[in-house]
Image 1 (spheres, rainbow, N blue to C red):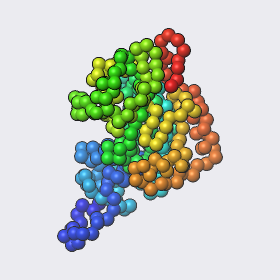
Image 2: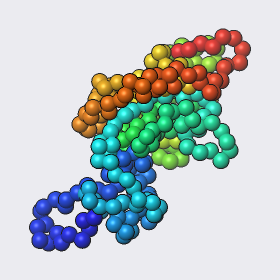
Image 3: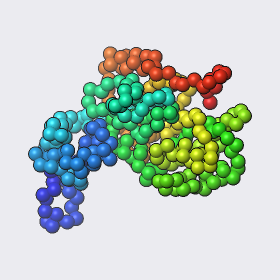
Image 4: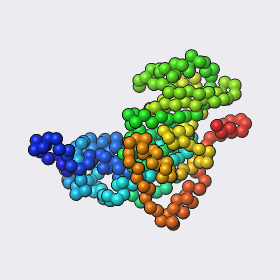
Length: 298
């Protein structure tokens, strides 16, 4: 750990090593924001001493989390995988739910090293595209507002939507946690008082799409995320299924947030076949069907 280096010897020289939170995030232990919280709470130590935010480590330093040494495999630290999941309604975005509800992690394949980190969240009544990655630095950048990753949703609104409402929602309205707006709103059909729209926004605040419409007296009765940055949810992925991003998709996503592409790890044929079998298994949780009539996918 390099906190004790006397920077007065050469104040212009960069400190050796990497920031501790970046190393732990890249290992897949959590997003950088999560790891920073662990460090601030005193849960992380380096070489037996409590770590501080901003301290740097190298390959010779021994890192522990909750007094448990972290085994560092420098090869696995640079592994980057991304999983696309078509989340059904009724699942929560936590690893363990005290109420026993199904979680988005229930069907994901197990990892030998690290863990899946969810890139943002969708509330229990929202379905659609959810990304997971083994790279905490990638997760941190995809969620950080400075990288301007837009999200697109298909939303069914109940009520009479006027042009004035649409203009207000695009110009911006004040919510309880600050100003918010849609960057784009496109009508996409519907019948009676239920109308479908495609909306885009640059943030991922809690229930932001629903709260924006509710600010205009509208009620959202269906909500599905269909795009996150350059990643689209296509019709080939049924509800409750997942697939891993291919190399070209992964490279495009990495470049969007200024990261150098990394080759996907080599996989044994048996492991690849097992992964394919898991991906084809029926979903444990079925999407809620609308009452009356046939379901219409849009």
